Image 1 (tube, rainbow, N blue to C red):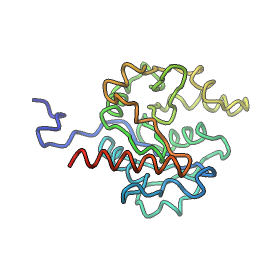
Image 2 (spheres, one colour):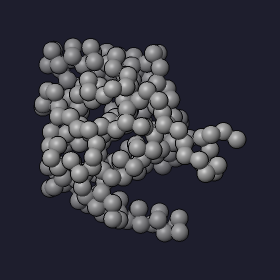
Image 3 (cartoon, one colour):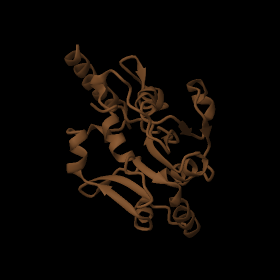
Image 4 (cartoon, rainbow, N blue to C red):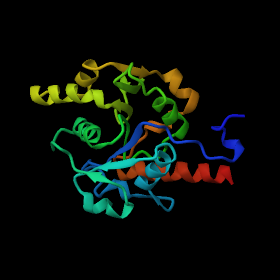
Length: 217
């Protein structure tokens, strides 16, 4: 019986050498207010993200250009080193600021993160890849991915060229894509990648969450 089996009653160990990085830099323009603090059955979205990532990684940091809004969470916070670059700017900042050699990056508005899937991806942390990225058909999930500090030179090159597209980034590094079959072993319904952009989507999440809670009672 291994240490990582939950039915032993023992907590699963932290993934070593990886920092959990939560990106909270979006403007929430479509939502109308800061969606990170939207309530889902008594818990804020970002609290759900912290709970799951905090069970996997010993160190968590938040990347945000509004640190005052998140100070109550008690986590280290860093503003974008270069503002206006979108997700790539948040990844760049996290890689520069984190103390570990690799970081697992997620957005603050992902209510259904799956601990088992995060652990699976994070255990691929090695010198063989610069990034490990889920990919379903043509769609990549850059904000549910593992990145090494070895990515920094490629990001700097894209910034200097003025082409900060995430697709170009993956073409310029050693990327290990996780395909749909691999993902479904841990997250059969692919819920991990669901994120909130509009109030109507939040209502849908609340309803789904309520049904799940009733089934678990």
